[in-house]
Length: 211
Figure 1 (cartoon, rainbow, N blue to C red):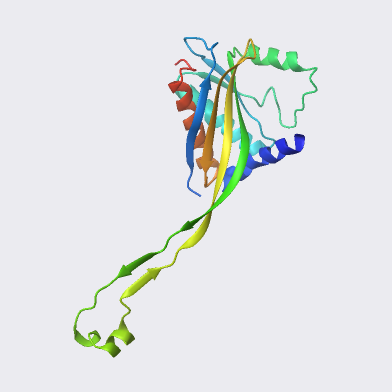
Figure 2 (cartoon, one colour; figure 1 turned 30 degrees about the vertical axis):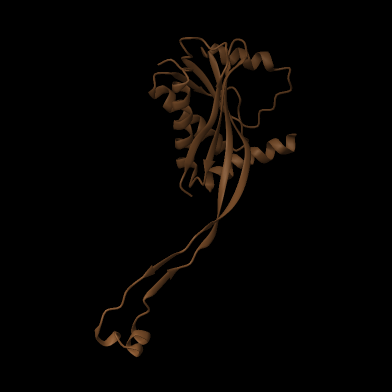
């Protein structure tokens, strides 16, 4: 299990370094215990051991939440790089999170990664011949080929499946979850911004955050 988590954790890095970003929500779920007014103070953590990836995702989520009038805190001060819980420190960690005024905890993790190869068909364009010096065979043959062909090719799409969960800070209960698909991200910056925007928009749509 730890090996699989490590592989998926590294996938978050590969995900950020792969061509034009496409992020879409595959589905979202809202639990029955969600407060009617939504949450207004979120603690944000990306579950990856890559510091750069974690920092960028958390920072973008924090900034976008604050643009919507929602308080947000990154996890670095409480869950520093390399932090490994032994279970005993659970209450201490939760106490620190709650002392920030947090009413919900947002987590992000990579669930899976796939490579899909597809064929991109070529195109053929016919150019009709006119008259003049290339209206005869040799001129035609020697000067101009009326058929222009762009050959097809195979390409591989990299797809990553991510999960974002929202937990009530007091009860630790899961109150919201979404799964998203990201295809061919071009860079850390473009992925992080696009993903974060998609997640925040979905939280607003589902009524989980209060402006």
